[in-house]
Image (cartoon, rainbow, N blue to C red; front, top):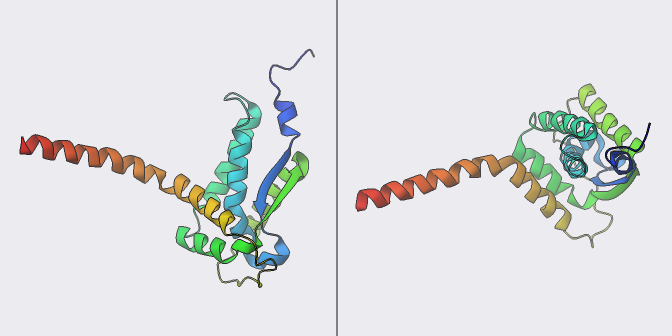
Amino acid sequence: FGTPITDDVNLVSLKNIFLYIPKEVAGTCWVVLNIYPLEQSLRKLASMFGAISSNRENIIVFIAMLKSLRFTFDHEELETAMQVFQCHYREGSLISGLYFDYIKDVLHAASQETSGFSCKPPPCVNPQQTPGTIIHLRLHFLIFNEAPLLLVLIPFTACVVIIVYLVSK
């Protein structure tokens, strides 16, 4: 078949590194607590592909599915739950096949149950873990969820300043 136009095949076979909380720790909150970190992991993976890559398009479909699922939950409750479980997040890496099986498990579990935020985390095993992980997650959460609001607020503020300037002149 000749040489491939892109190196997407090599990219897909990479190990995918992502944050997660194991089912044993999160219990019924497993889906809720893993939606956002998994979405961010997919965004990172999608950015590795070219704009016209079919792999990128397929990954964007998964991102949209997770995002729409995430929007069914209250943002503040989700953020609070992530903070409560912050010491239980782990960094994992899976080869592509297992990584996408994991995504499938999360989406399948989400369609089977409507879990809430009422679960309580077990005590932290490693008290030395820094809150950097959750701060990183929170920063991304704010950027991707409140950025559109900020993009509207900045031009609006600029217009008000210009109007005030013109009126005072």
